[in-house]
Image (tube, rainbow, N blue to C red; front, side, top):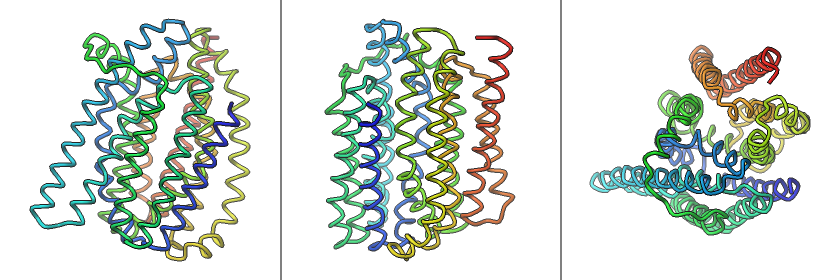
Length: 404
């Protein structure tokens, strides 16, 4: 099953990567940076996730592991209501910004804001949909969803070729719609959204301590980094950074696929055994294999990425040193698989401290290093390294002390 899921994600990654290389021949860093600035707000709007998303991916499989199917569905219905409400709030915000741009006769901004709406739906409501994919067959469906979306996006490259920036906007908008549709259409756990204040309170009590620091060091940090690049370095460097992130995302999709599978497996195992030590031992082998494979891939890409970009995407040569730094996030991310047990056990204080420390360190490094995209990438990698070392230090110490 892992091979099928990872293989489907790798295929989707390869198609997305080819798409990114092709559109880089038709739009330059300046235009990509102009487009990317409209997506910064989407990251900040991720604040709506802190109410439920820190709890649902943990609580839903945990209840399934305990055999409490009815409560799992009830929790899912209450969470779905919240995801949808906040998605509609975000949609309204983008619509208002689009209308303001219309009155200002700034048509590039008008369509730039509108193109972000389907992406917002996938960024918020899509996370709920993906959480519902839990079984082996579900992960195969999820992989198929990725392939469908990637293939459709590849076919729509024709619009970028002939209409450049405007074709890119239309492609992004349509790709977002397809992404939301297929994840909803093939969702294995179809429940009706229901306002349930008591269950929302329970989710919030569990989610907030986990989600606030997670929001700070993901959505808030990533958006702030992009905002920093836009304001201090300009749209061109934002385009360079965005394209580098696209390639990095392509390289990391296999690792993320393995991680997504084992997040569920480890959480279900904790629900079955209630033993952190068993869950940690269970995570060691897949973590070691994932890290080993990631290091090999990172080394290969480090030495081959420059001639590749020079050949196929000469307008983005400036991204080469950035990508060479960012690819090392792949083995770092793979190493974090064993830390899932901390979330399963709801170690709130430790997780909050780790994430806040990582965010402060990252922003501090970025401000101290020379103001360029390479400095930004270095800050990201160094703070990630600190985060995972600190996490394993805390985890191993607690396991030794408590023998849990």
